[in-house]
Length: 437
View 1: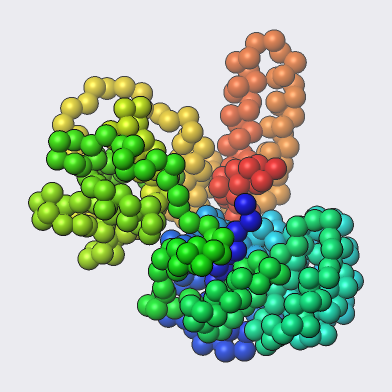
View 2: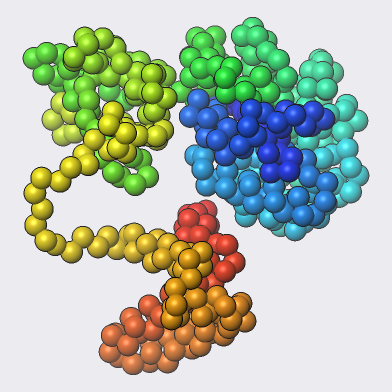
């Protein structure tokens, strides 16, 4: 099903989030990572990220910031700004942008669209327009575009809508419209237009006034506008509760898998959780509904709900803000009362743990450390060792005994991690790139 999207624009200037294309006043403290996470947790479907840099140095800094944002949030990024060549588009895509938009007021970007859509795929290239002339230029080149980002300076009049309607493409074509101010009625009116795929709402940018996007989406659904909301495959009547009418809920960090807490839900808490996307429980001690984080700010945002085989216990995977425990500990399960000695090495975490040691050596050098020796000698020495270890793997692979190749691969991976640290690449970058492929 094709959903209408609610997007939030994010304008970056000097590595800070600012108010708009022309107004470079910082939004709150300017922390783009914090703001992006807030938009994600509030229910936004994506971010339209504008790089407002002037020179190459700031451009690179803002791209690096986009990369951090892409790591932080689970919603797609659509990025653009200060794009002059194919390399800029490639950097934005590699930074984690799902799509890249080009300023179609610049004639050279119209030509660039043909080049980059051929290289990276039509679906990844959008045109950004703020004048009727630029929009008509984009409409004339829909064969090399996956869509259009329309700025509010461009009125949504009947003629323009007809122009968009008349275009036929053999690929999905999305049209996003950025609006500065909105009312519930204007949201419904614009999103009801068949040509409009989503709205970028600048009113959402300040977290103090950030609306409940999930409730807003439910209101849009009532108006028969298809939007992406949570829908449980089971209703409360399908769930088996205790004699007290409560359902135990095990809460787990959605990325680390750490068990955070156990709480209870009644029907109202369950349905509120599904509707709002925020974990809501029934407080047995206070006999009242309890939105986790409402007083502490330590909200839990739903990522996944699973029911057990007997349908009497819920597993909630969440994004946890701050600590889950009232004591200030990350998890309520912070006290060990019994433990047998065992090898608790987690193969999935070894790479990250070793990499963290390497990063620490770089910040806190240790006398006699081979890692520090490599950092001191620099990139050429590190590359030389990577090459040597790669050769050793090739030689070891000819040996039928697997022990030697295991040893050489371990050496190679260690030196690769030193290289990664030297060049500012993380395992998360690598795994995300592999996942994209």
